[in-house]
Image (cartoon, rainbow, N blue to C red; front, side):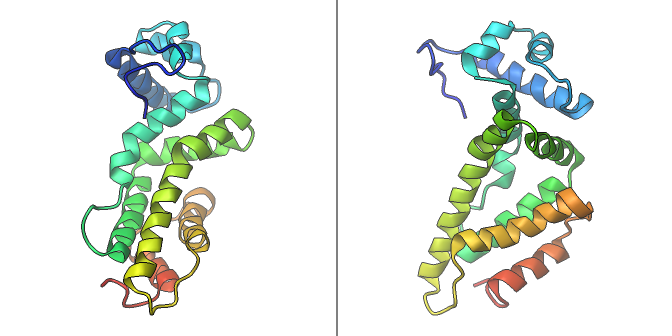
Length: 197
């Protein structure tokens, strides 16, 4: 998330213009898809200059990832209360629910697909979307190990790969629905049964 000061120039940024740019990027990505989308189009849609965008973001990929992240961050967060394992399970369910919504599913698939051929977008996807979520999940799973020292705990990075790899396989490859029953079966298989407490 950007601060109210432009990190490149130190000048205050216009919150209204920033939000207009991110909203324009979301609307264009949802309506038209990623191919051919340009900073010029985002600027025109937002009613700002192209130079304004480049003062705040290094490239189109960074704008798109910030637009997607801002729209989804609150919906993807783990709850603040409950045991660590309850919070992790709830967070995984929230990811699945969000990715069943066309307004989130379509842009995310477009961003992932395009990132396979666009180094800047791939970097933005990792740095502006994946990294924070992976770090948060790692902290939760480390807390699970502290709360349940006698259970067999899988290394957090491997467990994250197993759980989210399965979700993204359905999302990106098979196109199957990420229903709650599937998520529960997946979590039982990876975390073990009886792990809600």
